[in-house]
Image 1 (cartoon, rainbow, N blue to C red):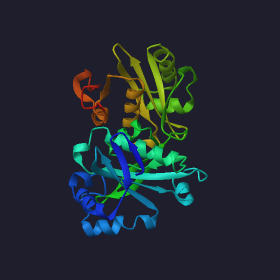
Image 2: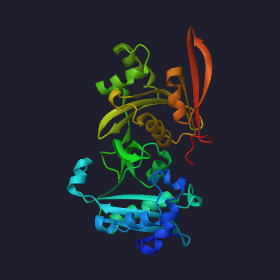
Image 3: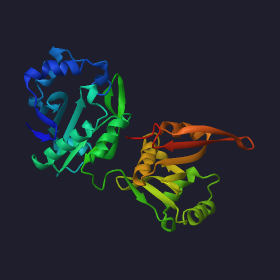
Image 4: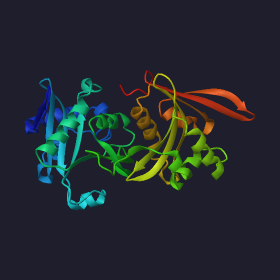
Length: 329
């Protein structure tokens, strides 16, 4: 047994586990997230793939909960070359891990969060890892929320990183424990906003002259009920967002913009979700144009037309609520 955490535990894989792995990796519900629905594993394939993992430096384990086998987790030590390829400090001891829960009855019960936290702590405390990493596909936001609850943080965007169901998928490199290089939220003093912040903010402002941007910073964000946030990746500013706090954990999203070179990488959605969690909001609303309405829909906001609010200009009100589809609970 590698670890036990309440009803959850993990042990090293044995040949008698292969039929169980074949069952899990023939289930399209599981394959959608792990290996791909175009890559089912019969018993012979399981023997070939999992029987050779030790020779490749990968330790495979069976996860059990309440005495029942429910999933799989594996870990491996990263080589210096691999750490350099990923932009990690080559002097650090870094382990990678991957996992899946093969019994769908155990999905959405917090098991995944407990699993990755327990395994990461085992690698840190027993095997001397400085960091533990994972690289989930960027579309799998539910999994990433689970990993973040366990203490992992996004570290680097990996475009076209993993071949899955015939397509090269973008991934996030996530790290535990987080360090200064991870994606993080900071508060920006409007009186000290730099040129990078102003340039990014200009994309969210109509007629963004230097004077207008300065007026918004000094007049709008000087109020005690407003806050301007920055989104950092590897210490560099990639986005800005501003909110106005209201009553009962409600806020209005005043502005949000992502640096031109960093768009279409999921930063906007991640930024909104991070602000919601950081500020412990139960409701967030915004007003936008038709062009941006799709972004809010992708962030689990409801979107309702306000009609032609200005001559020839249709506006939309967008609302997120903890009780709605945007809730993580």
